[in-house]
Image 1 (cartoon, rainbow, N blue to C red):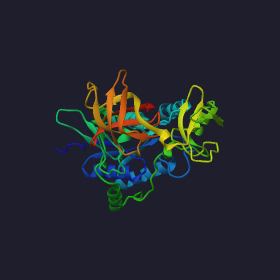
Image 2: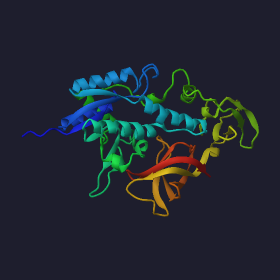
Image 3: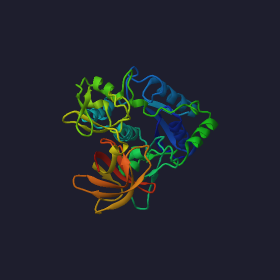
Image 4: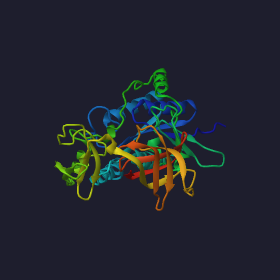
Length: 363
């Protein structure tokens, strides 16, 4: 008797990573079904590379055809608008800088799409993320960094629960980008050398993304004063959503020397500017909505490494859990431009221990 193959849904963005992920699963003997997410209307997607537009879906369909697998498009536009875009605008309107990729991974890719995969009778959902999943004996699945340090995306996946991770697969997580492209060429995939489309989902036509969100939701901007560190007025800005901590360009003032956004007061609408790099230094932060993986915050202090943004090299820190899913983090060495609204992720070596959202920095 020939047993039916296990079915796996592969999220296909049109890029090389997800295409190779699907191909590797085929080689392992699984029945693979490709699904692409439509996150925006075609006329709303920015020009050029976009994982939301018709070009990306066409690329994904072509890759699926080349691999000989079924391909479908899942309309996620309504949830994407409410869960990701509206959330991002609400953060900008409060003087914070959102991290929409984290929210999209949790609510869309490992939320709506995972539910769709289960409805299709699939055992697992696979994506092209550069991350790995560990499964200890008699324990919960846990998230690990991808083998390619330059492409590791575990930072953007910290909010995925261990239970959800047990239904996930990251087939390219143990490979480098170069190896993935080489495999794609060997497989004859047309997108083997396709350029990256990172953050294309979060771009706006003809304007900045925060301003595009304001217009999309027909919200009023919150203008206010631009102040130096001593509270002296330097000018008036047209909306706090246009600024982020650490920003240097587009401040709308002439200082005669380099200047950066130090902080934003969402109540008064004031944007504080510093001309000193050391003015951006923080010794720690307060995090909220903290989630722990495979351990509970019963400890009083935890020594680990932390990242406060995707491109930042991890630094050693001490984490002290607080009430209501909060935590105080103290860095071993100060960091620049710790930005409210961004994610802070805790690591032990390559293993993700948990993470949360930066509420405020501390000196």
